[in-house]
Length: 128
Image (cartoon, rainbow, N blue to C red; front, top):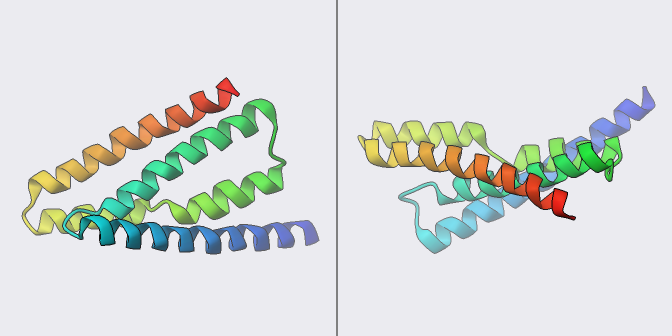
């Protein structure tokens, strides 16, 4: 019971770190590229997909992360860092603004690049 409690705290702390990292990434992308397109959400989802592909594969195939560290990073940090609900909301807002092109581009970019980067992360971990 005590182990589960401390693991819950570690996952929560990871979520705290991941949400701060997400805020910084969003702020940075919007400062650089403007707010017409949700660049920040796309960036965090691509980066998160790469990291989860990389560390998930290392953990599963080489057991380089103990289960607690794996949960801290993958569930806590990356779970809070990536933003599927934000992606969905921003896509809906683009459609509501009658921007079928940008809404569709947002969906296409997320699915293509996120699948690509999970695969690249997995491949990279296997090359080590």
